[in-house]
Image (cartoon, rainbow, N blue to C red; front, side):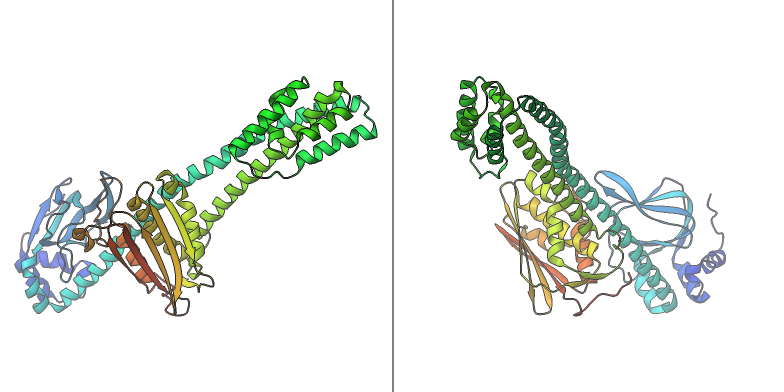
Length: 474
């Protein structure tokens, strides 16, 4: 439980013992104590509610307080303050309302000073003011890092969900194809055994091999109607020869003609024609299935490469030269499921011979993810998003354009404001564009937008490598 100081001198002693005020002259602390008051707060007390005016500065003398931010309808802890730390208003800070809910977590004792004394504080207590400003900078840096980390986790969560859907389709296709391949190989082996026992002549084997070669050759692309007509035609041929018509689909997908099958039927004994057709069709089907497995696994490999490129796996925290066009391509691959689900056409237009930019590739890709993700939401069903990247002198310029309804006039001034969002509760934190601008500015670039009904364009400009690289530390 907190212990209330009995005299102003005791309060000054308690403040002077805090590392924050170690270098502050006692006379300035006496000035502070004369204008503020010590308060006891029980655990569980909501000291400042979300959005409330921050009219006071509080110094924690005992106990602990936590800052909770509403994320998706639930309160999540963003930071905490213990003994010697400051919460609430600080001189020079632009914060006028609480970014979250301040909750007393342990019985606490706080020293409170109202904002009305700040003007006199700046004039009369320069050392105290300097200590508070340093605390404000440290607090702001910590809070912003927490914001950035939280937003990145949410972005990665969204991308992980989308990636799971993207991987599921080719993985399921590869699994189905692999399972069917075993049956086709068994059928081919059974048919080959029958043909071996038939002791075909060289001429008959040549005819069989000719039909197999035709079926195995790459087939031309056919429309659904043409393919269905071929399948019906070939099924009729099989039925006329007393054979199982279920092999017609494999034959229809090949270049084999009725005249080729007639030659085969004339060359081999009728008793072996069924085995010959099964051997030819199972071989064709097995190759088709193998192609499907290859295509599916190549798709999976491409998605894994996109993930590695997007996240800069193994060297995320190391700055270096970044290929913006490749980063945009990886980002669009990560968002492919969302654009497809929302029926939004997304196109990438990248100029040739783009210079690279210098910085943290994973953070730059987070910028593209947020802007493209927002553009897809804005475009809506059957909408269009164009991502264009080009160079302009020693600057790389990325333009992300959507044909949605545009940003309302009353919202434009607040687009980059932290915690501002027009999306329903739970669908956004309101930090994405704020952190996007911070990342771009850290990389010595800038971001802006223009918007009107049917056309909204976000522009990001980043200096080319060597034209203004950011510092290597954060």
